[in-house]
Length: 396
Ligand SMILES: [Zn+2]
Image 1 (cartoon, rainbow, N blue to C red):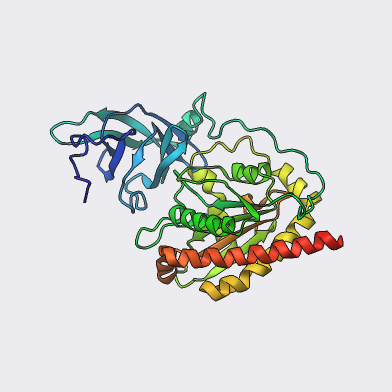
Image 2 (cartoon, rainbow, N blue to C red; image 1 turned 90 degrees about the vertical axis):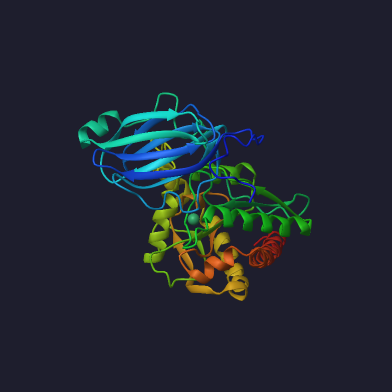
């Protein structure tokens, strides 16, 4: 153990960012208290957001070393919380509220007598009207940086099998302040899917005929729309989003693949759709500028062909994943995941397994298993590439 708990502030380690070492939630008669322990004092600010009701604590760059289960269980007015990097140089803690509430007192105490710095929020109930009156974005603070609008859709891009390279966008789900699903033993979805994306990148690049672009290569938060944008900007021929989710039924296990549909194909799909699309909301992103109608129209117009291609790839992945890990029943499913909505990039979302299932959680934490899964998906990419190249050659 290199970490000496409680002594971090005195140990003199040369870390650039302050370290968050512990977080606590306590229910008291007068308030719910949230305490974040840090190696040093930091600047911070607090704001509240409605629908769903949240308190956002914004911090500078922080190195997060909280316990794996931190934030899963709530207390008092707080049902749960999440933390992590948000944008370059910024971190967030997002506290979900059981009912309208406000921060009644907040302060930060410097380290002393071997104790770390403590940032304290005392949260008290308020009424709905008062909550809504003050909830909202700080002036400078939309959740996402301004981004250029998506280009109008042109005709579906033919596969370039002649002189260009075949480009694959790999998207590790969640990240940063959004951990995704959590396994029974504390495994975080954002970590295992990033590790699998790295393994898949290695597999694909070793073949020499693919270029890989990543939506995220580290533990960072990215909005769903920016993931789609990254695939389009990278001129990807195929977009693969990797997830390892959680559903209420712990017996559900095995892999599955999703392609885009406006309506979820069944209750499992609907449950996952809701949790995946909530990614931006739980992270405290301003969605007020989003216009779903536009993207719906674009999709309708376009891009039957794009969806067909995604389905072709899905059919190629399934037998490979079946050999590797087994599949859920009806493993090709349909849902309205936002991340699949690029109108001109065939996009799939692979659920590698379920962290809510003990066996799947064990597999996902194994580097050997992840390498096997990466190989399985890479073989399907080979099949798909060969198929699309032959289609391009024959003109069909
Ligand atoms: Zn996920």
